[in-house]
Amino acid sequence: MVRCTTIPGAYVVCRDKRGFPRTLKMEAAMNIFKLGLASSAAVALIAGTLPAIAYTGQELANQAKVSISDARAIALKAHPGKITDEELENEKGGSGLRYSFDIKRGTVTQEVGVDAQTGKVLENKKEGPHPD
Image (tube, rainbow, N blue to C red):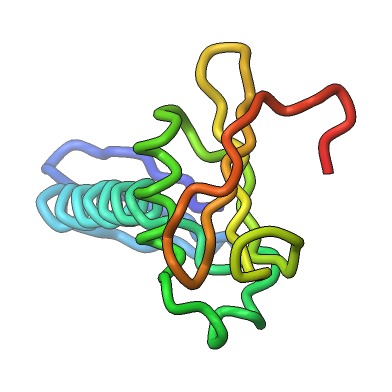
């Protein structure tokens, strides 16, 4: 942890975690502070807009004709809300390979299944008391 104090004459004295003093001009200290804030904001913005990279069943993705991002869009069109879980699985019905999404809207969680070969919605039902 770094501790800093200002001193008259537009200087800042900071002590690093070992206790060694570092004297900076106030302008340099403010630039460092602004850079840190800007970097933190950029990381938060990027992290908030990117979807999760890994999902259950990702090893099956090379067998799918429909991408996970396209399947998400199809599922959200069938049932708008927030995706809380997603997986790619071998399951009966359709081509046998499907994306399964849990989509929450309000207090209701809906399970939406999208065929990974055709993009057809195979399932769109309220999640039961004992989800998969």
